[in-house]
Length: 144
Image 1 (cartoon, rainbow, N blue to C red):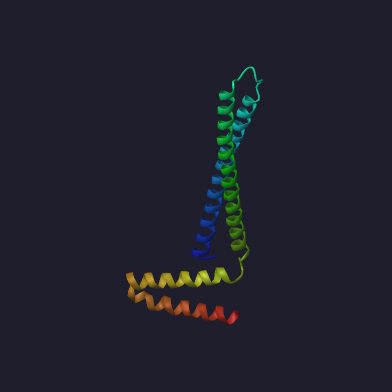
Image 2: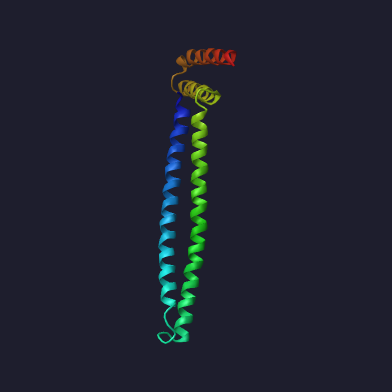
């Protein structure tokens, strides 16, 4: 397996983990807002003799603000979960490409990068590495 293919899979795994972590945090915030809205809703349903009209209006105003926050947070949480699912699907698709063209082309790019680096740092070794890379690429193209 080539270096670039391994780095691609590793970066997709990290991105998947980060995306799921963000989705979980967003769902936790949503759960807090749900609990807060339920508490405000219960507080607003007290009997009329316990609350005057202004207090009831203030309670409903607070409830409306929390419900708006809750709905916005629900949308954000679902978007983050969808994004995490898309990243995970991309990771799975790349993993399923194992044995197909992607790892081989990544290997060609790896070899090319090594040849460039050796040309920069050790020019006398570069010609040998480039000739080997060309042979590998020609053998790979003959197989396809």
